[in-house]
Length: 350
Image (cartoon, rainbow, N blue to C red; front, top):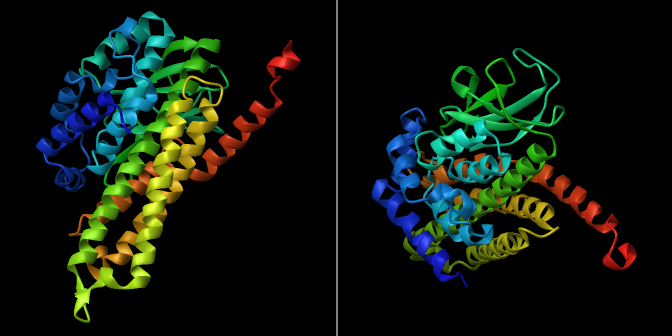
């Protein structure tokens, strides 16, 4: 059962997002070109959303990652377009850097004055503007994106303003960011690597929680439709074949949520990286399976743009690919598990 803190956070998220427009805001955001609402972002910052995992020594709440999961499920359930998870991951990363440049960014981000996100990065073979072979993706209209240059072992603060942007299926846009003259180094060496690894685990766990919220709400919508839609003189939910499909998806949601919660409890232990990757892989796979069938169970109206169920599928597609596709996360889990099994036990070490 969620703790009192988890319940309060989830209720606060629901109140703010419902008051801002709820799911209808996701449609307006898409139709309006995907520009982030900085007023809503500022209110999120005022409520301390981005400081949830920030250590108390830096002015944050210092919560364990597992206590933010119910909160993040509510954000997923309402298809909030803001990159909340990436914003939450950024602040502890900046605090861990211990440099003046990172401290200045931390101050701006904590108060909502700037939208600063930590997001995934990968090695590139080169290209226009790329000097150190680092390539990162970030929402196109954030102020600063934090990326890790694996080859140079540096954390970089990059400006998406002049980056090439591409549209995403949910109506947003991603900027392709490469190292260049405007990049600011905020940490190097082991400090940079450790901080970004922690942020990456937070991203995967957070997106997994969002996906749980998405598919849970979409399944609830589908069950409501199956109770109302009548065919051959009875609700379609009375047909056993459709009941079996709905029951299978209920198991999908419940099992995935349990795995994500277990991954949250693994944070701060040697199992953290593997658990976060496993949770993200499972949530991405399950969400796409559930959402696709929810569309089918709605019949023809499910394929119409006017119905909100399509918004859930499109958002799930984006989140499933963020911070590692299910396949990439399964590979990460395999690597983490192999390292765990090869590590010396306490008895061997003694």
